[in-house]
Length: 421
Image (cartoon, rainbow, N blue to C red):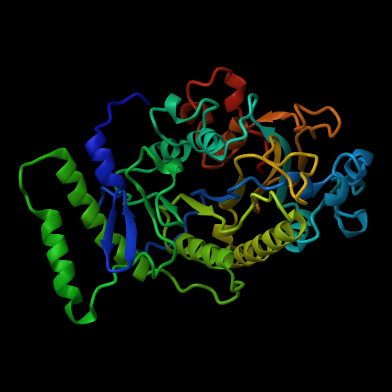
């Protein structure tokens, strides 16, 4: 995608409407109509991206308990999870795999046993960087060289540009205070941290007058600059997005009262309310950068994620047409180093383990596990390039990954894994 981009236009589209204490991103250039269109098309695929920012330790998430090196005092040492606590995973034929889940992942284990969880090991970058910002750039742009090679766009934005049409007001939402770089390059993305946080907080007595004034500003036909036109579209989109959020279906009460529970409840409400939001980005509000005291921190992180995700899957599963067509994938910029540091934690690493979850997912263990003894400068050697993991998410959306992950040096780096029924 090498189309010309007007910096002024892009800035205005990425800006925020701020009224009182509320702010929402206004990337929408299309007006909303029929705000709550019921999601009942059995062919429309939706993808929820759980972003584990900070670098989750995959080695203690999916544990190679049968590998003696894992328990070697000079390798994982005091951070190794005792075999007696590990939720052991079986192969399709019922035999033990030698791998297991962290003891906090009670519900994920149940879903794995139900063949709804694909676990993929060894995902990383051929030339890894240990910087959060660099690796986030690689993952979010969908290119091993970062956004400099994608004209500043995110892989999810490029997918949205191919999957949505001009009649759809919005196709992607970041559950955060700003639109993720994943969605740079499309004008069909928005953000909000909750239905309430995304609504215009106006004085009740003057609400209609304020809204009318804003809409008048947004629709004035003054012949002027592209940037002003984009800003007016954004203003109109902000008002309409506020209305849309106010009309969302009621959030189910069965979610845990945690920050992650609230975000996944919000995600489910969006999914149940319309057919046109195809990608929901959920940056988990957890600290995965466990340089110190990793054992208790990761235990709490994975427990919160597991309980919220379980509630989400039950909520979506109550409607079969959604359960068949909604999948969840995890991302994280990198894993952690194999050997602990001096603060009972781990530093930035390389290869990692990720999950794809859904009723149409072929459950099981995938990918070649990296060796714990043949390390790359103290880190795991990736056995699978991260762009193939992204290609798998793109394939779930019924798109050709090669069209979205363009200009990769190797054609096989955009080849998706066969994880779906």
